[in-house]
Length: 326
Image 1 (cartoon, one colour):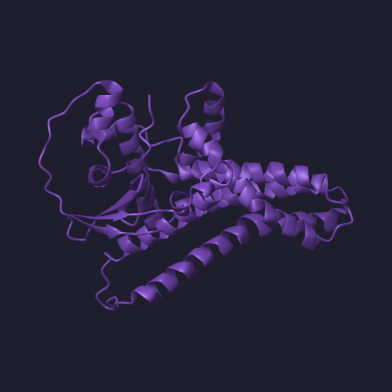
Image 2 (tube, rainbow, N blue to C red):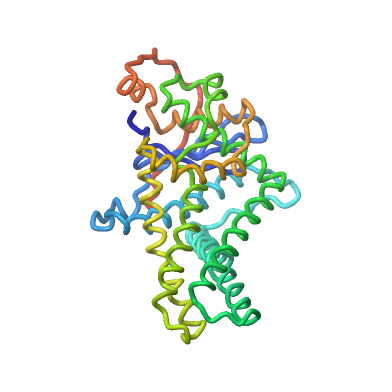
């Protein structure tokens, strides 16, 4: 079976789906109508082909996904009504500045929580237990990183608003799985499809955590025992692009392969998705279907891969869109 190639993200009361040079955000508005926004996008790897090479493209793809993700979250949040404090319009320049600051904050927060904090935990135990081995400290640091990552997911999964977002996350996966199983894209078929998928961003994050642990343990054997803590931290920060690049290639391979080894590697990430996805309601599934149909010809995919044909139906959903170079 050929992968559909589409991916997505849950947003506030909605779903974003991406396919090639387009992405669509479908949001369930307070009046219960579905609003769809379609945008063209060109990432750096599309603009500059020399960046679209294995282990390098992953860094830029990750940055692009983060940027598009925040934009779509901001768009979906604009439909949340606040009568007491109506939203004031902002200029395009101000919006771009705020977006850049948000992306920077997200990156700094992630690095601080999942790289710097575990490193400090490791150095704390180095002093308390008087351990001189960099390798042992790197292992302890890795265990702390896994613990922090799991606690983070568990804590946010308890939040009511996040739980609804996780339901939309489940609807996103179920829509993609429905198509890739050769089923017609409708509420009934989507409902019975799995909410777990190998190309999920949750799996990517787990790959990043695991590969960072392995990388830091290997590098710790090279760095002299007497090296300063600052040097060790700088080395870890310098490895982040490499770790992201490797993680992207593994996720990409996992999403396009049904091999047993790849399946085994994908298992932990799929298990973890039980935390980051929930079974959606039917109206959430309808949002997912609207988002898919806005940017993807699933009927052509089913015809090519499963030999199935469907009659064309008139669309009653209005959409808007423009270009969006990323």
